[in-house]
Image (tube, rainbow, N blue to C red; front, side, top):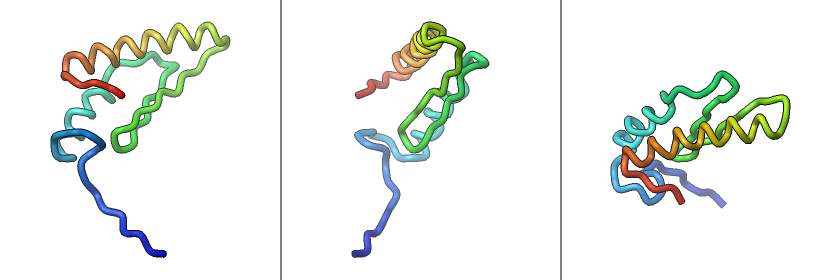
Amino acid sequence: MKTEVGSGTPQVYCCDPGLWNIQYNSLLNLTFTRRTKAVAFADDLILVIGGKTVSKVETISNLEMSKITAWAKSNEINFS
């Protein structure tokens, strides 16, 4: 079975992909800690966070998520 793969707008986003890329780029340009690496694909984002203990990683994760939450609020974006 052959399946055609096309491109389109990210899931449930009302703008075209070019506008989404411009806006999403500002998220990737946030200042994360040196132990954090942000990786994006389409409309997905993963934060890879290193630390010596689970507690340290949790602390850094909460800090990074507060930055992302503030970014989303200022850009009027809701995450599912």
